[in-house]
Length: 324
Image (cartoon, rainbow, N blue to C red; front, side):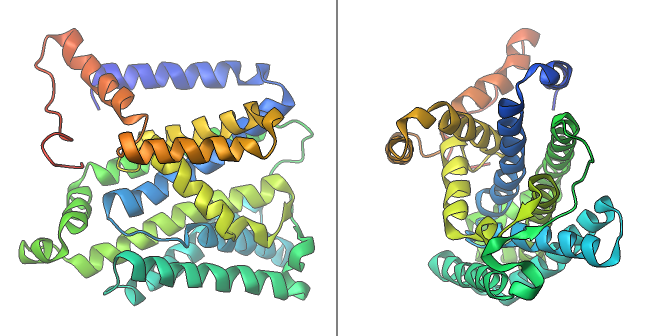
């Protein structure tokens, strides 16, 4: 990330933090939920967009992280941040195990396996009423004992920024190159010396850990945790957000989460028809902009430094057949 890009992003972050308190309680809640989805779309982009592992169990890990944190805090009385850390750790281990089990699965087989895992988690949470409260929901301990949403706004912002920084470091490191090589051709990557099995497991573990982080935060923000957090509708929501924004770049995936969440609230007057609008938008995206609607804007932003500095514009990797 060049200096100009970092400066623009820091200024945008400072403005968001500085003027966040001016938002009404309603729109602050929408912003918090958008940042919750931002962590989920970014981590799903890391798994599906970079590593090419199309998982439909991402929201199940968010649910596992939420229940783990909520139950540990409720049973043992540990502080909420420690419960959230435990939720992340459990999801990392469980995600690594799922990645190990799915080592030889790709495409629809992997999607069906993770979908089955997701349903197991949801049905277990629905039927174990004595532990999870079933469909009535589990009352959770709040992260902050405050009537204001502002502490949650700042916390969600910090979690999203930290997650993006860590995921950005991964995708721009050698690990990121290995993940992209696995996505393009596993056999060729293995022939080139890439430890395919190890990096597939790592990709699952890391992405699941971030999903667990988002789920544990949501559990202690929303006060009530239900099995709906891990259902297929929410997973479809994550896929739509990521695809509309651009699943092969983490910043555009997060942008898709914000765009869809805010537009859904803005179009609430249209009732159920707003989902039809987004269905049509998704069809148009897949037909005319398969790399996402926000990818061209992000590419223009990346070229900003070169134009101002008189340097040659970067190569259009999309035209060269690369999806990096």
